[in-house]
Amino acid sequence: MTNSELWRLNATDLTALTRSGDVSAEDSVRSAIERMHQANPDLNAVVEDLSAEALERARSLDHARSKGIAPGPLHGVPVTIKVNVDQKGHATTNGVVALKNLIAPDDAPVVTNLQNAGAVVIGRTNTPEFSFRADTDNQLYGRTHNPWGRHISPGGSSGGAGAAVMAGIGALAHGNDIGGSLRFPAAANGAVTVKPGLGRVPAWNPSQTAERGLLAQSMSVQGLITRSAADLHLAMPSLIETDPRDPFHVPMQWRGSDPEGTIKVALTKNTFGYALHPEVEKALDIARDALTDAGYDIKEVDPPDVFECGRAGYRALMGEVMTLLQGDITAAGSQTIKDIFGVYFQEFPPIVETELVRMLAKRTYYAREWSLFLQDYHLVLSPFLPQPFFKPNRDTEGAEGVHEVLGCAVYSYAMNFLGLPAACVPARLADLPNGPQPINVQIAARRWREDLAVDAAAAIEARVGPMAPILWDKLETSV
Image 1 (cartoon, one colour):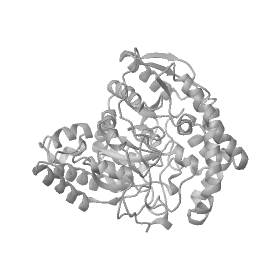
Image 2: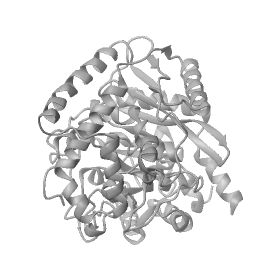
Image 3: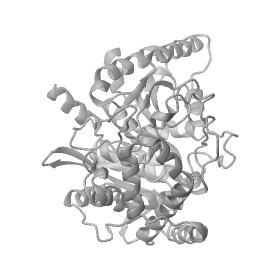
Image 4: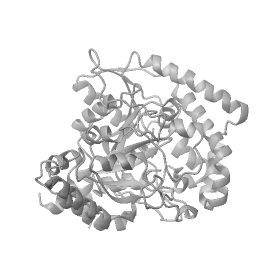
């Protein structure tokens, strides 16, 4: 492989070369930048090009290594950062025109942790306005496109991150997730991610002028979108390093103790009245067989009512949004995002005032039910969405569109309300009428056991294979 093709390597393979000195950080970063300049104009995934400062940082890493300073675990790995997280000297726009000049005074913990590990930020990725859509478009930067084709949304809100990493623009992509914003883009683009559990990754934006609402604090998490499950095992230990600016961060090791006996997995195909598409069912069957052959004990059984829990959680979140954010959305949002929120409030009638306080209390009930269930099962394998991923702008098509995009996604936002970790991994490449499309499944885990969810994702990936090489072949043949 030539230096110009280093962008094809996942972070695990790349660090084997950069940390040994066989490849310089500068060559690694330069290859990713060249790929970004080639692929991004058609995707609009990266909306701020940081090539110059990335190359300068890569050279400084090479210089430090030449002086005998030990390389970090992510030495020379090119990464992207989502524009809703602070990076010193750059605008934290959150996809909003009114915030285009909100310059971050310092780095957020995730940026600090990635850079302390030796990663190099090559660009900042797109997000929808206020990072509150499962699609990615806004008036400030425009639309992000899915590298598989424009018949598929790139997902959101970390749509720029998902499209970038799968197109080969950086080996790791930062994103965050309050209701599915890591897992939607992973599912849309055929990437791998794990939504960490509550308290796992330190979070805070130095540019913020007020603290976030209680549900935003407890449901929103920071994470990574990758091309391989191995890269999550490589990078997440650095991401979870403690930072005192997050007083609720839980300092724990990435790897927990090995479970006694066989790992037990609950498989559910329950979609609560939403039609289960045959391709999604095939993906679940493939994932089940892969885990069975890898030695997991699979039993088809329904977990506690995820529909009631998920809908209640999202209605409570909408109540908090209506109370704390609606004024900002009205003042600074486009008509598109205002209309979408109007339909959100129809799909998920906001729980407010006394009832919101009661629902915050009931959250413990839902979490306890799942905690008891997960005493018997280490993991839960489920659909992520009951249907293949939706088309761009589907959520602008009124109640029916929002219902298809978010209404059916209870396996997604229920995990945020519960604070449980959940991985999302492609289990099938479906040949659909509009073209090939990845189908991802979700693997939820016991609290603090992100590592077990990623292990299971790796077992599924070992059976199915990574999606990125197939995508790159498709892109090369279509040129």
